Image (cartoon, rainbow, N blue to C red; front, side):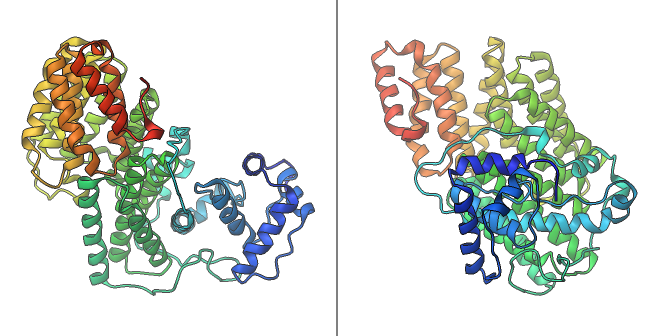
Length: 488
């Protein structure tokens, strides 16, 4: 029994509006539905969980996570409820660290994806931008990313099945058994299919399929596999988790997105792939930048860079430079932007002797120019001299984008170009590119494109007296979904 109140559980309990008796009845009812008829939770037990920090025995924490997830309409994990048991620290923790970390990673993966799949989200989504930033990264992962815990990192392939004290699974997965190279290769191909769909149409339509696949991979990771196969399987998990996070961010499920990026970095750790982990963390930084939190994005980028280190290929370092440059542009630091993007261009053209990992292949010349255009367009709100390189890079990106396959990125390029014209005092050009964007925006399920349209909309305010601009503003207001409608 704990001595301190469980403030995490208390805070979430307050949000539900339940009484302690209602929660007890819900736990018993859900437990019975899962075949756990022996549960006999009552009001006094719930009070001890909240007021005395008592942690109930399995499977009650899992049942509580399920009922809170359903009630609050977002993923609530056992950790969120403050119901994880503390493991031994110091020497004992170090001794078992390598064995326990893979188990814990797979446990988190399957629990979180299972809860996410269970949610039945209906109606407009709330953006939910209350993100913890760097503090969401667990201490053990932080140590590994920065090199402090490298000596305790698990070796790829040394996996144990996830079992509880009585030898039964802690996660509810069907038993597929170990798999072979052919099955892993199929999983790797599925990642590419999902990645291509996301780049074309946005994250809304395939997100559940990606999470379901990730959940199945988590089940596979509860079995022993040969080291090379286990490493590939963990990389599949990392790639799917990044996709799940990016798709979640793309439709405004920001808290879930950040958790998936951290899960991706944890999975990459189990595969021993530092650059993959760093790229996952850089996605969380981009998410922060989307919400105007540049200082926190820079903190995450320092962690992303520390992770990759000398193992990162030049093109990976070029990509990281663009994310950091975006943060510096948001802060108005022109010299840092110029330096970082100059280095990015030099790194991008460096000859490499080994093939790029699949997750870096999307960072091509068009993407480099598109990101550079966005960065200079962001800087232009602080420094008008950035308008010239912004226009040049966006024009190059629009020319280099393929006719099909990168529709979302091309749409974001159009919005960047429209913004360049509005900032530069060219309403005719701004109107032209805005109309091109409006003609295409309905073909994606990306909420990020609506967010960019909203920001561009504010730039039109000083031209609202022009009849054609006033009509365009009315069309934008009519087109943007009600929950994200810009102010008049």
